[in-house]
Length: 305
Image (spheres, helix red, strand yellow):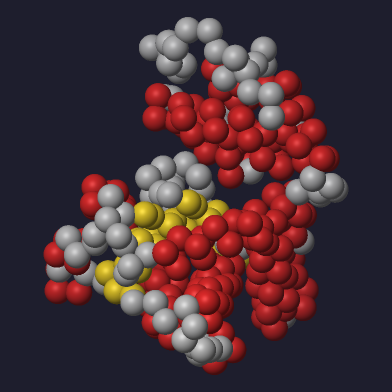
């Protein structure tokens, strides 16, 4: 059985954006092995651009031959042309050192720090890792991405929020702060086993904000599927464009959290959540002024603490 779907001749993407779109469009048709490679290309483009096949294979827990087959399935003659395309994109964006490489440089020095300096050194490790994740989040989402997400929320009649397991603190923060920005909000928490009844309250005029990270809570995936069936808009906050909630979303904000000693942070996700809340407050205020109702609550009055 071949790894590659039989789709006939394929024209290789010529830009990083075309490459991403091609991977997402063909993702479900890839074998499990090539889906694994596809996720790595989407989630770690800097590694793909800067590292050798041997290093990439080790970091992605796959084989160099699988990476080559993946590149050929997209129309390239091998992995080299795909890597050059990503490298050119990286240089065009003036990124001298990618996020993935900075993380690997950071983690290379982590293991010895506590033994050398004591348990108090943990604060240095965690804060430095979060700084890297926050810098990457700013670059990945960008001002335009945040503005588009705020517009989705502002236009919605009701905002439904779901985030289970590790994502639950982010969901509850949004459910707490969004009403203070003047937006009707419903938290889907599944208490008492009522999650599916809560799904049915989502209408075509509403927006679902879904937060989930690998390995993706089934309840959150079900909520996204229900919102999609209802015709509602979906704003996903996730760690990959290939995640099951991103594939159905109207817009996805990609957030890659830091991980130190097996513990994953939520700092970047909460930063994005706060930016969304304050952005919505500004839009609500501007809307009230345009309608001649005077000033609404100032965004500065939103309790984002």
